[in-house]
View 1 (cartoon, rainbow, N blue to C red):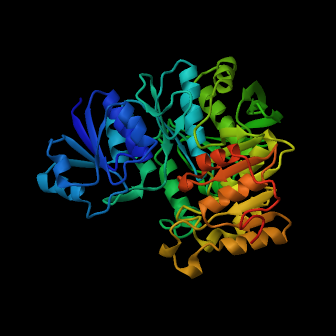
View 2: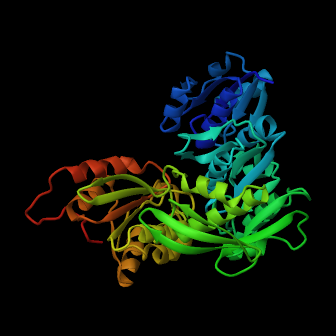
View 3: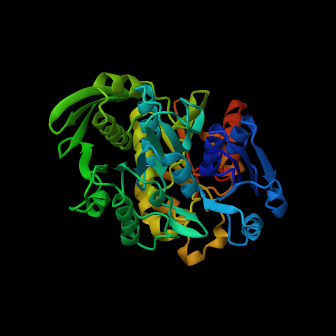
Amino acid sequence: MTGSVHLVGICGTGMGSLAALFQAAGWQVRGSDRNVYPPMSEQLARRGIDIAQGYSPGHLDWGPDLVVVGNIARPDNPEALEAEHRGLSVTSMAAALADHFLTGHTSVVAAGTHGKTTTAALLAWALHAAGRDPGFLVGGVLANFSATSRLGGGPEFVVEGDEYHNAFFDRQPKFLRYKPEIAVLTSVELDHIEIFPDLESLREMFRAFIQLLPAHGRLLACHDDAGVRATVPDDLPATVTWYGLGDGPGTRSTLLEAGPDGMTFAVRRQGERFGTFRSPLVGNHNLLNLTAVVEVLAGLGVDAATLADGLADFKGIKRRQEILGCVGGVTVVDDFAHHPTAVRETLRGLRLRHAGARLVAVFEPRTHSSRRAVFQDDYTAALTTADRVIIAAVHDAENIPARDRLDPKRLAADLRRQGTAAAHIGKVPDIVRDLAATSRRGDVIAVLSNGAFGGIHQLLLAALRRPQPTDGQLPPGALTP
C-alpha cells in the first residue's frame, strides 16, 4: 500500500533515511525542518523530495495520508499540533519503519552503546554482497551505496537499533519498535545520561529489547563486554551466541595482521576454524563488530568464501575513521567518536593503521553526555592514547550548570600531568591556526565530534594548503593551556 507522507524534522539522519524508503516504495514524500542542513538535505534534494523551511501548519495543506513526527519535535511543534487538529494519522519514525518496512521481513537489529552503526552497515553490505538483497536503515552513509537506507527485495531488513527515545508522545527507545528476529548486542555502557540516570536503567532498556526476540530468534552478544554479560539473562528464550576476541565461548576472532590497508583475522565457531578474512577496517572494536557479522551470516547459511569477498569490499562509513584529505603529508581524519570508550578505541585503531605517526586528537564535547562532568576522568584516560590533544569549548556550555559541566581546562591539565601534550583552545579558528602552524609531515590529526564542529575539517585542510609563517612564531594558544 502506498500513499502520501509528511515528515516533521526530515533532515535528521533517521528521518531522512525513512523518507528515502517511503519514496522508493512509491509514496509521495514531503517534509520540513527548522534548519535544512547537509548532508541529509543534499541527499533528499538529489531524490527530488521537497523540504519546507521551518515548521508551519500550512505545510500540511497538501493533505498527507500520514505524518511522521521526529524526536526533534517538541509537544508545541506547530505541525504536530496541526496534524492532531486535522485528525491526520500521526506516528513516530520507529513505528513507521516497523509498520511499513519491517513487517514481512526478518528484522536484523544491531544495538549497543558503541559499534551499532558500523555493525549494521557491515551486516547490510555483507548480506548484499552475498546476494540476499537486504533492506536497511543505518545512522551513517554507507560508502558502498552512498546512502543511509535502501528498500531491498530480500528476506532481511537491517536496522541500527537506537536506544534514544522515539518521539515526545512515545518516550520508549526506538529499538523497542523494531521487532527483532536476529539481534546483535555490541556493548552496554552508561550514555545518554539526560535519559538514563544510571547504568542499571540503561541495562533495563537493553534487557527489554532482547526480550522481544522470539523463541526461534538469535542474539549475538559480545562476551568481551562486561555490560553485555551483566545484561543478558540466563533464561532468554532465543538462542544466545557469544562472540569475542581470542579465547572464550562462542564465535571468536584472532587478529593476524594490521596495517595501513586494514587487517586480516581468523574466525572460529564453537572451537572449529571457520575462515580467514580481510577487512579495510582496523582496531579491536571493529574486529568485534566484524566477528558478530561473520556469525550472523554464517548462521544464515552464507559460506566463508562468500563472506570473505564481501567483507574485503566494504568501503566504510562516512565519519567513521574517514580520511578527508592529506596535505603536505598531514592526514586529516574525521570520526564520530564522543563517548570515552569510543574515543579510546578509535585512537587505538588509528595507531594500528598509522604506526609510527604522531597522533593528534582534536575533541569537541558536544553530546548531552560528553558535555557533562560525569566522564571527566574517563576522557583523560581515553585521550592519553594520542601524542597531542586539543580540547575545544564545550558546545552550548551555558545550558549546563557549571558544577555539572565538563571542564576542558582541567582535562588538558590532567593530560599534561600524565605526560600527554594537551591544550584547551576554545574557538575553531584558533584551533585551525594552531594545527596549521604546528603540524608536520607524517602527522595524523583525528577530529572527534558528533556534529559539524564549526566546519573545522575543511577549514583545517584549507589552512594546511597555505604557506605558513617561517619566523618560528606560533599562534596564540599553541601548545599552551
